Image 1: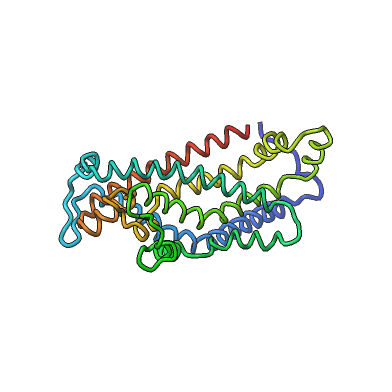
Image 2: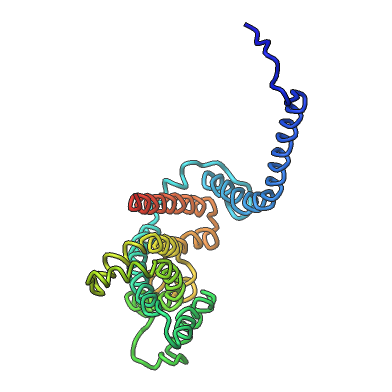
Length: 305
């Protein structure tokens, strides 16, 4: 049945329709303006990330020499990964290095953050001193440690210690380098999380008779969990992608005992000129990183329910 009721008094249907059309046009113009603001970033991401990622995926399916035409050989590049003993050894070494450096770096960074948490005279000096190594480029830091431990002219080279002459000492020296370089940066991340904890929570715990250990385990650590998770994601990802410290400091030696996964990719690409095989290794490493980060985020999200 047709509704013949007249429009409400004081509301002209033509004006109402005009206002609605004007509002829709205004929202569309805002959408276009937003797209214009996002366009430069989208172009940069597409050119510098999505396009190279797609190219790497296509290269991994081809026999791709440095010079000459490429030939499709899927899935040979992925099948031969398990047949590369150097890559298998590099996986085991990288996992070992990741576990050790993540534990030590987290412990040192947390200790430094707790040390400089409270304001007191001269605390700004210590915060700056702890963070200062983070301002040094990683390649420069590796060269600095290499010169310092050099047995011929280094200030610590006179000691009867083969700092990078044995597999264990090479790993130990590299860990010392990474701790010196990144402990202050991770300290800053944890310090930000510590300062976000309300002071009233600590005061209430002290008034209830809680000691320092109880405050640390039942208040500080639970409230610091998201910040610790962020630090762990950065530390684990950076360790699995380790390259500079081993390439510059130890050059993978002695006897390929400190060859990381990224170093194997680099050697396949620029020494063996097998770009297709290197691309396949890169894809495998990328998938592993995405899966590991997704797992860490899932654990973090589950802990905050």
